[in-house]
Image (tube, rainbow, N blue to C red; front, side):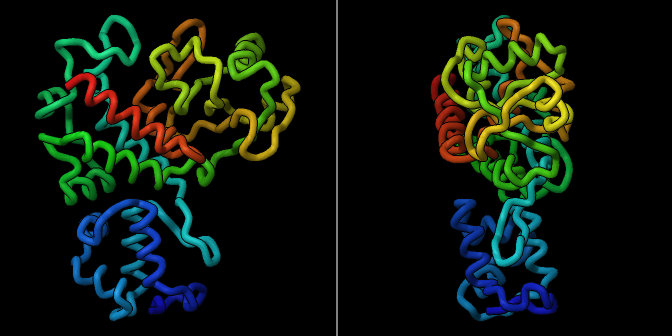
Length: 289
């Protein structure tokens, strides 16, 4: 079925678009309807080829799932506001699995992220939060599946590869820790993120290729003589778009974004990073339960 009232996408098949969005997002028809604030029958009829949706209806579906049309492809919108909304909710919950004295992923006997949320956890407001409330992922008695659903939805919306800020991959002949040493010596303000920054001993990690936030990635890389890497290789230097350099944690002489934000960046990362991030989130919950 075709999308009505939109010439540039008149030849796109709305049925296939909606099916693809659901498959990639891992959500049910009911959840997609709740996210987009449309009736479940609307989603069902589109998928069955029984309805030609208006462009307004498709816009609601795209906005609710964090996707957009790029030519004839459906891609992430790169919306970092979804990451911010998810972080506002997840950060205090996950913090209960961390020791208050030592910034590691070690759960304590008295801080467990299971069961009802504590009174200090505030339900955030905004468009993304309203969508998650409609699906009941965002609620006082949220479980790990709800947290994963929120993180996946936010990660899909804010995919690193689709964000609007500048980014440049650089070679790391001495590993990523050698790179941050070089950044530190050059007086560059940076913050390490991604799956590496969620690990228990993150400052000692050698393997992996994190994301590193820096201002003016291209200019900075050229200024200190970093070699560009092929796409998908090396370390990705990424322009901060949502205050990633404002709330930095120093551990072992290395600057990291908070672990909750690093985890969400992993959910929005390439390859198997989202799978690793989900495993990490589930393990945190299980170990602290």
